[in-house]
Amino acid sequence: MARMKFLCDADRCIECNACVTACKNEHEVPWGMNRRRVVTLNDGKPGERSVSMACMHCTDAPCAAVCPVNCFYTTADAVVLHSKDLCIGCGYCFYACPFGAPQYPKVGNFGSRGKMDKCTFCAGGPEADFSKEEFEKYGNNRLAEGKLPLCAEMCSTKALLAGDSDVIAQIYKERVSKRGYGSGAWGWQTAYRESIAT
Amino acid sequence: MAKLVAQMRLIAGALALAFIVAISAPVSAQQPGMINPTADAVKEQQLLQQLKTIQGRVTIPDEKSGVLVHPAGREWRQFHTVTLKWIGAISIIGMLVVLVLFYLWRGPMRVKSGYSGINILRFDVLERFVHWLTAITFVILGITGLNISFGRVLLLPWMGPEAFSAWSEWAKYSHNFLSFGFTLGVVLMFVMWIGRNLPTAVDVEWLKQGGGMFDPTNSTHSPAYKFNAGQKILFWIIMVSSAAMIISGFMLMFPFYSGLTVGNMELAEIFHAVVGVLFVALILGHIYLGSIGMEGAFGAMADGNVDLNWAKEHHSLWAKEEIQADKVKGGAMRPAE
Image (cartoon, chains in turn green, blue):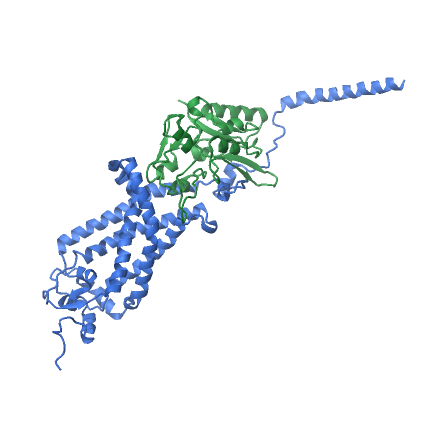
């Protein structure tokens, strides 16, 4: 079975935010929430670098470990998903996530959080595939159609790669050897406890 | 003629260009990495080692999404799923075991001279109201709080996911709303009773005798005013713990208020959870003493009255004050006129 991962080639990302826009549009993500974002390090200075980040679908996901109601599950493709019906909006998954993937709509008083929302690797949720409920809660299910996540498909420089771990690692290694440099797979050590030698 | 020269120049220039390209092409094929445009840019390992977190700028309104990688979340996860469970289990189950063993050995602490049948008012209606406001909110806050940390392990297996989520969602809202009632109760309790909880010389004597708690013959009657040394210690522990719970709790309830970071929130949760389970364990002891652990004690908070002999044995100096102020119901203690 495939082990799905994201890899953002930080040497190619130009901060165009096409991935952010594609995801938001495809899944009708509500106002104020972004499942994917582009973070720019050393903005404006020499050595500026941009990285696109959403949920990394970690091995041994910390969000799943700390959830008080155990609403997370991992699919056969190693995609980490959760159930919005069971979620109580406590916010612990955000504290545990090293990448800040969980997002919450503001629904109530104090800091009341609504149901958690995050990148689904375009794989929907526990509802039936292609159902109306699944789309309303989790967005489009591209994986069930045999397609890859839209953010990677829309990336203007092919910096963001998504798909089976071995395939994208191979693509990245070939890229690095052809052009002669590569800053590594950002986030892989933290998410998957492995890195790609460059 | 001029046209020919121009054409010659054009051809010569083209040849020169082709020559340069022909020379450089094999050179670059032999050295594929001769330019690295991102050589000056930051590297992931370097940033993680220096700063423990990788942070940049984002163009979307959510400022805190500028944190790219925050590995400390892993340590918090380790604390919350492993360490906290041990602390909670040892303190709460340990306290229950200690109480059961103590009760089996000591039994309830009795009034040695038996009940006199004369009542004396110990806590008036305001004191009882403040106590019960604090107590009832504490119990619900405690149960709903423990549900967040331990519910998944203890309750979810036999409740099933839907029922457990429904209960947990209600529990979360109760916890957030009742926090205000608890805060009010604790503040009132502090103001109301601080005067009676300042340490005196009598407390040293009480502590030396262990308050008579470890004398199975019920003969040790350590001196005490309205609150004995044990109660005073409890009062101060409650006040300090409540302050910690309230401050950390409000931080958690208004997350990222005025620039708090994820690290701050994780620390607040650690504080709230550790102080919380220890507080629950402590109050279990208090509940034991106030109910079955001590004969005649519960009435003090139920209707405010205690038996006169109970007062003379456990709070002798307070009883004397009350008698002299002629507060005893039943009238049998009035001095002869």
